[in-house]
Length: 401
Image (cartoon, rainbow, N blue to C red; front, side, top):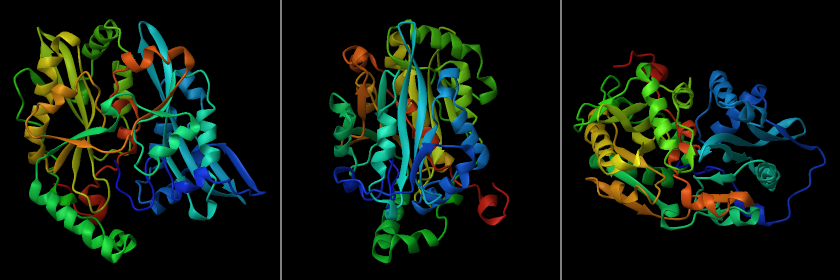
């Protein structure tokens, strides 16, 4: 998802090292991530052209709702001669299946400096060695690393949707400008391109909210994240699907990321006076030279309403997107249940590429989970690994519009 010349989600520079003999460093230590590692992790992320979290943002990400999740590592680092040269995140996600609470782990943000080639396997081994989880997975593998997950028992998602994404291009001229800028950057060098500073951030209309809403769809401010969402969650649980926990508390935690520069868009779909589904989208700007975008992170509805709710929610977001100053709307994970509904919406473009979803199931769930898992980007690292668009006053000292 993130376009970066140096690294990609849950992969690292020099991924070929995973299939070679790891280098042996006498002073190497692999340990759990600590909050005090923030500055060193930030330096790694800045080198890789990834967003750098604040101390508060890292503390929030490490907090993770649920007592069992909080007891597990938030990630690992590799120290060599006292310096952090590699790191990987480990996000624990709570799930529900037929009344039983399960835990899954998604790996994210694996970074290894070139001088530490070969040490990435130390981090991945820590990740896949975790027990007591129904699945270990990544929803966000890049093309280079995707074929290598088999070495660690993580297999491509079954079916066609494991290599499928969708995009709605709402500003074609802006996207052509972005593409041209990247072409020039490839010729001039990425360091020079990055040094050129932020582009396109002024295109965001910070005060505009979705306003071209389809009947039945309403904007839900975060202040109205109330017991309607708990009732919806109870209805969703009763349908027997394997679902990431989406009650009011879980959603409130996801929306509370202190590094966000603009509140996510939350749209609800009402049927017979009750909340029957919702769409959650985050604003992003992948790098300084990418156009702003809206990323659909979650999209779900009760079964008897999803044929109405899913298209209505997507159409409401896409129709309003250009007015909010973004050039595209993306959904980077779809499941077989809703893909036909997503594909039928006006302007939807299907992108088929490499398998970006890889999973290693616990043997107890190897048969039931693949058929019952209603997977969306919410289950993975998409929301908390996005780069928030920088507000104008952060970049230049000017007041935001």
